Image 1 (spheres, rainbow, N blue to C red):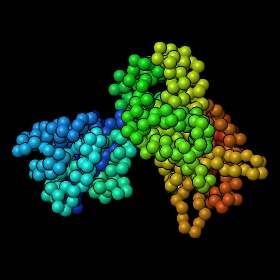
Image 2: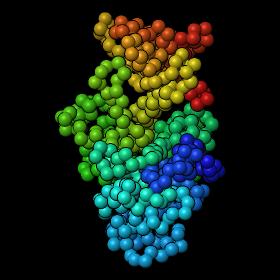
Image 3: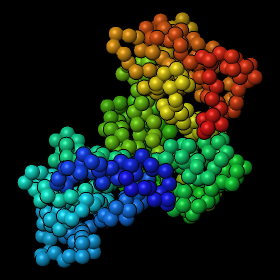
Image 4: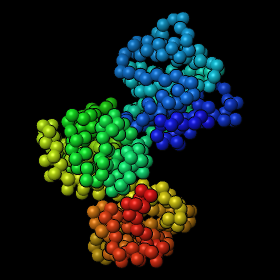
Length: 491
């Protein structure tokens, strides 16, 4: 395998997948014919940066499509092929039939990637392009004797997702399906050079793990310490002179499937305000539940929101915004947009900071704790965390419900009750004590009555503000009580 360049931060698993696809191993060396790979991910995640590094390292060709007519795109693609192969085509490309077949014929000497970035720009002007590629990759196509590793990349998630779905022409043709995700919270703190875990959570709650926001959108500006965080927010994301200021709006506008931004912004605002169920969202936006089904599906296809099922109530689910910057925009910026545009960031932030802590940081901290649990070692909860989420446990006797912020379930085993590895509660701004454990113990007992295996369930408290001495002492002596502070979350 080709070593990952030093200038590519993290992405070791993604790099391994790409180089394995391009160079292969002993088994794939016997395979003949071109193969297809599809790389996708939301904008600003570093896909182009990664693929350019791949092309440079493996001697491949990188072509970045633009929004253009088919004729212009064909000329640009021809120019790129000419520069790469040092061979001039004997004829101008009339359409993509000519271009794709010529590409496979002219590159025959070695196994190299040919990367077509921003592929959705091409399909918008040339809808037949996926079918053409499918034909040329087939038994009678020009790719049957070509070593090319064709990589199609794009940021329009709905378009890229449909390339290999259902009855799509390219379904079953891809040897690589790679989604480039934002950095996870620990990697993001290292990327930003933030050692203080409390500051890392606050920054991540604003801009998440999107690599481009570190340098391109903030010019390398980062909070020096926790005391500098408020000032950093005002001089970057709330500053109309920075590209980060309008980024959340552009993220929505760039999705081709979103044609009526108003309803989508209202749906996102509902979720950012804590109305995360279908009924709650519909009530917030003033529509019937069936009228918001389509916007929710589109936002999910665009990877801007995700639907998270209630682990203890079948058929129930909550929606969560995937991109923290959109949550920040909907909860903080959109409500005070006119004031922000005239450079009143400091006064807006002073009044909205409590909202930020309650509606943005609190739920975001919950999501980070679930991420922590999902990637935890088996020894932490006494088993492999097969499913991690949240849920609600009904308490009929007390006529109430117990919300579980971090529920960890073991794999389902046939003929046996589902094992609950852990039940957890999160508090960002509250010191947690014994009464939090008592609530979790009550939920554990109720789940046992519903048929779950809770014999070894770990009761976990996750806090951004610490724990009482009593709770810490209990946790030291009882392996079924777990406390996770910020140092452990980031450790």
